[in-house]
Image (tube, rainbow, N blue to C red; front, side, top):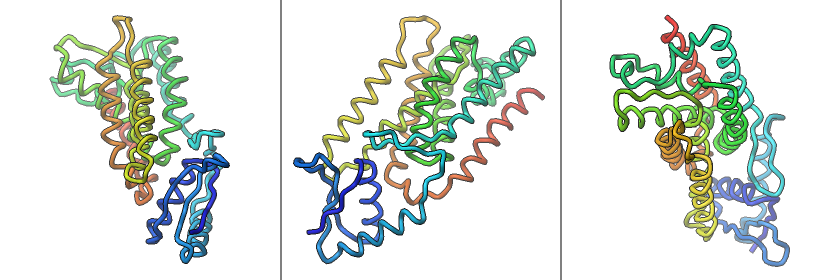
Length: 282
């Protein structure tokens, strides 16, 4: 058997998917002696496997925006800063205009029921005060960047954004008519949901223990970040965002290597943000 050593678990997973796409059977394992991740391939396929991995790196050179977090195998995409700048800019424009954006875009069950559906979208870019903004931007920058690193910048950002909208939709369904909310917490927890289910692609490769650890870790973070004794906390939006992120991420965890839709996803994200705010401010 041939052994190919990887720098991290994530790299081993990526290489395994590449080899499987070429019909090369392989096994991922962590060496007990060296504590390094490695792939085991049939000896007759070793040279072809090396060639396939080299070609993969040629065709998928990372941009300067994407960096691997040391010893974790996780990818951090600094382009998530764009998302953070968008919500920061909207906050300060709202402050400068005396709360006009908040009035036009906050989530209101009564107004959505009357046809103002765009509030489901605009509310995830609004914040009530500086502390609310700071919490979501700092936590969100990390989680959204990891989601973008895992699924691609376009697909990761769009999915987290739609998960936040899903959190607002949960509030529309389960809360009464008097319910109002705003904030990017659903997006932040949606990104956490995306990251949590990414590990399920390892199921069936002898790495079930890592899948369980990943899922348990994600749920524990949901409890830590999503639940609060503060009565102003919209727990349903948090849980709804997490669940929507997990639902969107589960199929993508298996198919992300075959989904080449980053640019269309980025265009759709921009169109939804600009389009829904355009309708709110008409």
